[in-house]
Length: 323
Image 1 (spheres, one colour):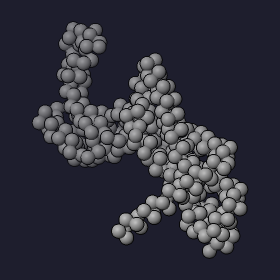
Image 2: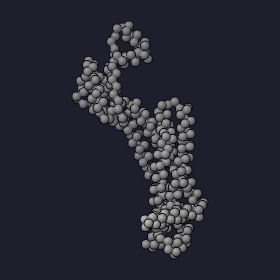
Image 3: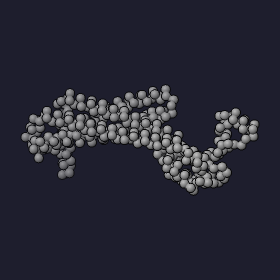
Image 4: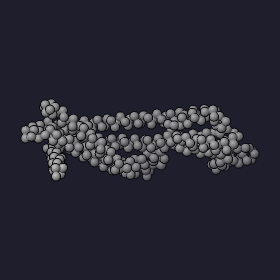
């Protein structure tokens, strides 16, 4: 019975604290609406940046998959040795796929596109000039240069055409550019997230601070009639939470509507494979993973609301020597 009574009292306390927070909002409707709208717009811009980040990552990943490593096999290497070499590469954790293309298969593909060349070779009784090739695709383009360095090991000198591998500096340069671009985008994304989070906390903090000073007489009356400081704190903390929840619901709904609409319509008119990959990643983020996106943004917004509200009321109470 004691536990049930205690729980009931806690529930009543919580209900009154939430009601107090709601009344704080209603006392200054214009400020409350302005705060929610500003935070919602800021979060919309954040979601726009996030969507562009996802699209860019997807485009880079799509481009990275095409930056495979083509390894030319030395002439005269036996098929068994090549297969052993392929199996060795497949065991590397960085490598996603290894495809062996024999010189005959390569000539067949080449001849399908350029039949006149095949006719020329046959007419002059020339041998197949193409080499055996092993095509390597990594999970991450950042690992390409590591794989190339691994292939330059002396143990593969009798299998891999080392001169061709070492001369392919252009491939290494492309890999380094992709790595640099990816790293730069991730840094920008991290800084933007931190900036938006800080701005959100400051906006809620200032709004709560204004509300506190606007209603300082009500706070004094609450203290005079015996209201606990935790109860006073809780009201403003719930006010910050309401700000955050209202803003995030408006923002995520608006973001999903606008960005999904744009992505769907652009998909219908864009034929570039890389851009399509980017647009599809936006659709995935705001449609298939909508509830996950809403959940983590809601949690982050509530934490920001609690933190900023707590700081605002704490500073006020300390100034008034409430402790």
